[in-house]
Structures are given as structure tokens and as C-alpha cells.
Image 1 (cartoon, one colour):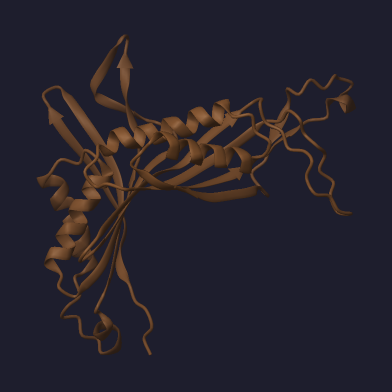
Image 2 (cartoon, rainbow, N blue to C red; image 1 turned 30 degrees about the vertical axis):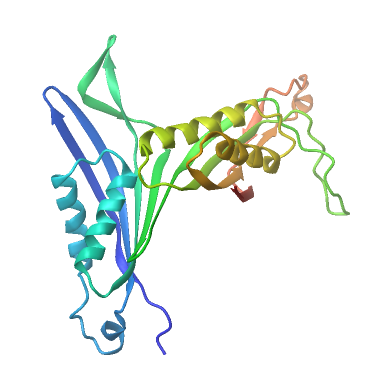
Length: 277
């Protein structure tokens, strides 16, 4: 038997330039669309009567972006979900994932240029909209936000066995590439303002928290979001430990002052948790 099916279009790239005189706004998105519904006959019988082509899904992204403002990835995702549910009777559930690639304006002297931009790091803003006939759930997030603190972090008093070689660390570098996702309680909120508030809260907590482990700081960040941003119902944080190993300068006849480190990519510790109300 055919147990479960889904189909859609992934990595639909979209750049929109909204022109307001000599000042333009740039939006750079990657969109993924996933359909679940009564499409079994397309698998079992080769009957495509009810199947919306994935190429049409791609064209829908472009058409709706041309017809409407794309001010927030969340609201754009909702518009796509509503469009697909309205026009596809066999569709039961649709998921739209949107990643926004941030660009900033180039400054010329003390003036921001109205039509020239610079890409801002590896960080992505994300949104996920899941829609069914009776419900829409909106989530948001941040991906690949690289952060580091050079003090205020320790890791000691951990379990040891005959294979443990790690030493206690009372003052170490803590670095991670943060991916966080959260869900909203209400649908009629200012998504830009709320997303910025969540991101700011996580960064401020990371900076100020006296960390006893990555786990300790991760929980503090999630709890701070729920304490300060009322529309967020839960937050899931993934924090790979981007290790920075201290170099033993004594072998070179130099004093160790906890200043010289080697960053390593692999292997790495991977810490994650979900914090809910």
C-alpha cells in the first residue's frame, strides 16, 4: 500500500526590487512549498488530473510577489498558503518555508546609497507557514547566526570515566552557529518587530549569561524569549559548539595567557532543546 505522500517545489529563488524614486528596497528570498493531499492516483495510476505542476508553484511565487508587497517572509508565506488552499480542492495541508537573505545599504561618506547594497554575513531569517482547511500555524526563526563570547563561559564538574581526557575549563571561548525557530500564538502581529525582539533577546542573553555549559546558556536564551516576547509560545534552539582550542605556547617557550586559540570545524558538540510556556 501507498502509506504517505508529499510533493512540492524547493529552492525557488526570488529577488524583488521595490522602487520608491531614487531609494529602492531589496528583498532576497528562497521559498520551498510542500503539498499533502489526495494525490494517490498520480502514484498508483499515473493520473495527473488533480496534480498542480511544481512549475506552477514556482510561477505562483513570482506572481504573488509581483502583485503584493513582500514586507515580511511570514505574511508572504501566509499569502501563498491561502492561495494554494483556495485553488486546489485535493490539497489537505500545505507548508511554505521562506528564508530571507539579509542585505544592507552601502554608505557613501555619511549617506546611505539608495540603490547599492552589501550582503550581511551568513545569517538567514526564516519563516514557516503550515496551513490546513481549518488552521494556520506560523513559525519564524534565524539560521546560521554565528556568535562568540570570549569570557563568562566555563565547563567543569562533568562526568568522567576511563576514556575522559577533557580538562575542566573555568574561562573558555564559547562560540556557536545558532539556529532557532519559534511559533507565534497570534496571526495578526507585527512580524518584523517581533522577530527583531526575539533575535535581540537571544543575543543579549548570550552576551550577559554566566555560562556553565552550552546547555545552560541555551536554556537561558529560550526562557528569556518566552519571558519577554508574549506572542511566542515555544522556541527551539540548536547550538553546535564551535570549539576554539587553546594553543599550548609553553612548548614554544612562551607564556600561556589564554589568548591564542585554534578554531576547529569537526568534530563538534551539538546541543539542542525546546523551551515552551
